[in-house]
Length: 433
Ligand code: GUN
Ligand code: ZN
Image (cartoon, rainbow, N blue to C red; front, side, top):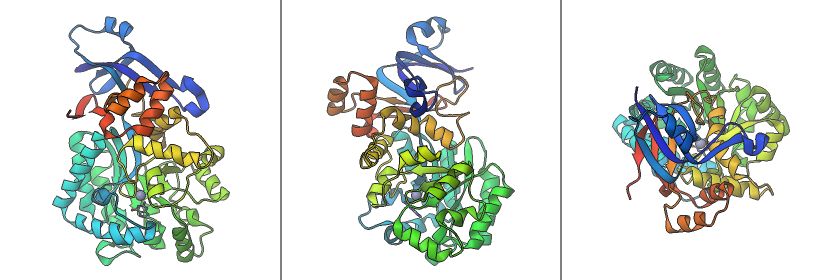
């Protein structure tokens, strides 16, 4: 058995702070995290726990740092890494101008592998240990990403884009080939180690009804696989879906008709939704991925968290790179705060970090594996350097409470805060000073 222990300030959530208040979190100013065989063995005050440890066990001393569970990114596109921050316009024009030409390159497996390697490195540099990721229409793009994630032993979800209309010829498949390619990838990768397959129709406008039917069929034929797509991001997109699916009562119905809702279905955005659509999301336990930096970048609109809470719609947080403008969960939470501010709601810091950890794990139905430091869970965690920059050192030095520190992290933080990232108790990233 291999055992490691880590001394630091340690924070995690047992539950949702919005419902349980401060009792939802556990914080040890001077804590010790004990890991055995890649899983959490114990957590407690350093002074108590150290007495119980075998003297053989080495203690990594991160005193002055903050350890948290690894961040969970509910929605991102690895092929768009190279076109992050591409200037101009809203969703549909941005897709045609930048996204489709870029995604074409992923027909080349070697190219895909190089970008997947950069992408996974960037996740780890930002303390993100689990992500739900779009590939491109090419099945080899997904092989490339899973190979890289597997080499890092990361828990990762991904899928091949299904797209059989309203896209350039070089990026389209057919209803049947999308089914076959997805099935092949599911058999090759789903539940292999820590990997999960997500059936990935890009969004309703780029799939025929026949292809959406195949997406629903895949969920039936392979119980337990996930589904990821986009929903109600942009007003022009809404009008387009209404024209393309004249028989659907609304955007959500274009998916619902084909059996694409459920607890393992994750839809990015969900900004422009009726009360009735929210109710059907809630009733089916379907999940939304709120992607704040993307929504601001593309001018898509303001996600209404209060309404989702009131109607019981499950959601957590995604970066949506490359419409999202950052890999950093801190920057993403900072923009989430500002989006709620514009609706006269103040997102509490505990709620933000819950959403980025246990909330994300719950949204992915992975909370038995991930999301906090309960014994037996997988030891994916980040070490945060509260003094990573002069401003950060100065500002956190003036904070009186943990809530203040967390809020400052979410407002001012970026990849420089991440001192190290651990996967299953092993160091996967160390910041170079
Ligand atoms: N809707 C369909 N495809 C995409 C995409 O690649 N990014 C975003 N933000 N929205 C989409
Ligand atoms: Zn997206």
